[in-house]
Amino acid sequence: MLLKVGELARRTGLTVRTLHHYDEIGLLAPSGRSEAGYRLYSQADVQRLHAIQTMRQMGLALGDIGELLAGDGVAPERIIGQQIRALDQQITQATELRARLTMLRDGLMAGAEPDMGNWLEALALMTTYGKYFSSAELKQIFVNWSLIEADWLIVKDLVRSAMDRQQPPDSPEVQALAYRWMALMLHWMGGDLDLLDRWGHMFRTEPSTQGRNHAPPGDMIEFVETAIKLRMALLEKYLTRDDLRSLGHVPHTQWAELQAQVEQLLARQVPACHPYAMAAAQRWDGLFGQLTRNDPVLRQKLLTASAQEPLLQAGSPLSAPVRAYLHAALAHAGATA
Image (cartoon, rainbow, N blue to C red; front, top):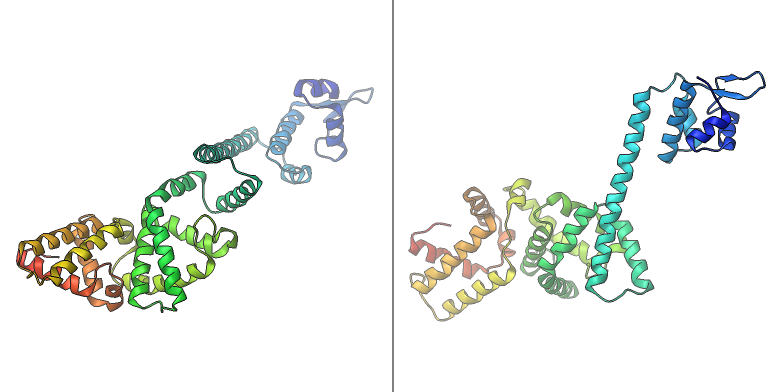
């Protein structure tokens, strides 16, 4: 069965002019001509036309389509496969767009209507974020932000103060801040080190993300990363990446409360064998269990690393006198840590 150009145009929804153009550029030459000179299209021609239109919907230029179709005819299963892949890509893009619109809608419902500057900033950031993260990952990051925001603002101010006073990265003060920074980042990303690595890479390479929405400026990122690299180099001697992923989160406020509690006991010269001391030690044991998710192997690895590396001790949320007191109290209680 052969179709004239007008019939083919009518049945496919294309224009005669489009089919003529395809013929003129050698993309779809009709298999025959009528005695009157009219173009006649065979089943193979229609199959080729289907492939052309499929690839046009995929966004390919006519010249590229011609190269892809050069040579032997295209198998029907390949044509259908190309169309399925095109539809899958459209579905993925539509799903991604829907997720981003949902986040934008939720943001509008949560606050005041943005002005033009807010819109432009949001568009710029979403474009940048989209280069590194899927919408599902961004949703997780934005939702989890509330878990660390309050402590993060405190840590950021403390880091700026240390920078202004030119504290070195290996000082106890900066190492303690590096510990808090690392713990907050891991908690924020749900222990996903890959996500955390990509987030850090984005901030290092995309200046537009720095200093916005409580994000640290470039000089602060560089300062903290220097301190963190010192800690990581030591931790990696004892812990694997899987170990780091397994770590739980202990809010800094809980460490600070324990520090203050033991400092009071020391100031009152309460002996390590006293029930108050042993209660504090049991609380410390519980926090350490929370940090290691009650994994005895991970607990021992952390304790060994701390015992062997003075720099790690310098960044501990508990001071050396407090740790010594708690160890003594645990020994009196007959426990081990």
